[in-house]
Image 1 (cartoon, rainbow, N blue to C red):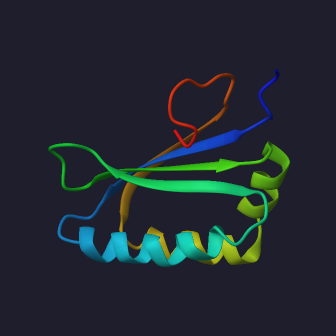
Image 2 (cartoon, rainbow, N blue to C red):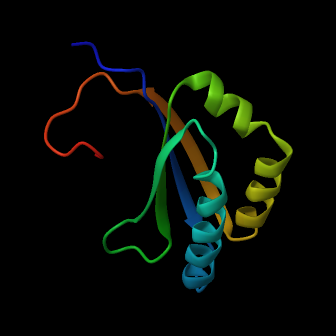
Amino acid sequence: MAEPETFRAVLHMEITPGTGQEFEETWRDIARTISEQPANLGQWLLRESGSEGSYYVMTDWADEASFREFELSAPHVENRKRLGRYRRAGSMATMRLIGRAGLEAA
């Protein structure tokens, strides 16, 4: 059986030292609103082991078009501004899920 299309974006952010707790709280607040988007399949915030200021955000979407539409929306531009005050550097990679094994939500 073919996998349904899942579009994943992985963001890497280096944040300003000493702002981790505030960054995490802001991300959680923003994540709640993003999870209300019908095409959003889930989000995860990860902190790199041994690094207080290196974070990854992983977000899954039903398809790339839905992600791109949300990415350019006014509410998400505001989200980026809210998180931007913590960020020193960042990058984003996008990908398509082509297979899975084990946990369904990985």
